[in-house]
Length: 249
Image (tube, rainbow, N blue to C red; front, side, top):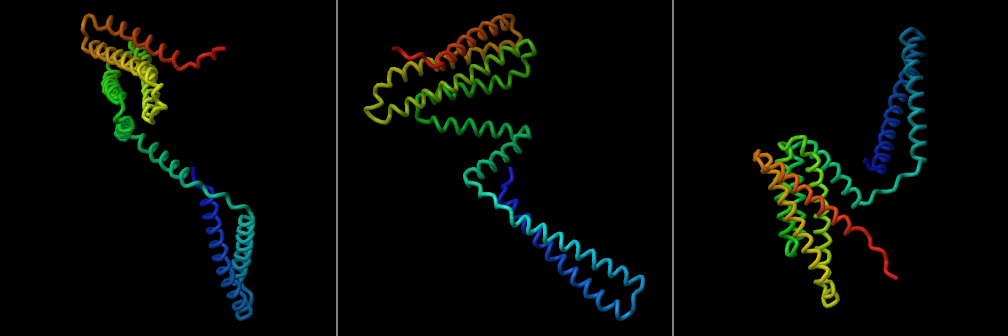
């Protein structure tokens, strides 16, 4: 998205320069015509001079009219610097993501930034385990075959739910650190942490079963199906946890 204010002012300056330039050309051609026609008489070359002078006058008039019409329009408001920076960052990110290497670099940067944001919290270790398992599954998904597509989709849903749960748990833990007012959140934090640990363990079991399936072990397909069912149950439980509970009378 181009800054509308900058685009408007740039067009205004361009029209002003064009109008001034054509004014100079028209003055030179009209002056030359005014001198040469009486001096040499009206001939075929002089007709070209007169036509060029008339055409330049017309173009000059159009340029000045366009410039004045644009100048009469309201100038768009300036874009907020924070918004402009966000737009520039989004454009740069989109351009980099078009390349496979750039996509990998940005994904790694996002993982590192998320890990730094959770540093010092109890969920940091579970987040690191989930990241490691997710990276392993990304390397395996292309070799699992079409029969495992539904299982990979279930894993993606579960990973998203686990990351949301980790963010919630981290928010509760940060609130607990505010002082005595956060002491009452300890039971809720303990419950959320236990659910996160259970979910990450289930996700790791699924990745291990997927790795066994790639290795073509005899029991790998059955293990993958069991791990998928278990992981699906975990994801459904996390989805139910996100649903608002009805207010008690």
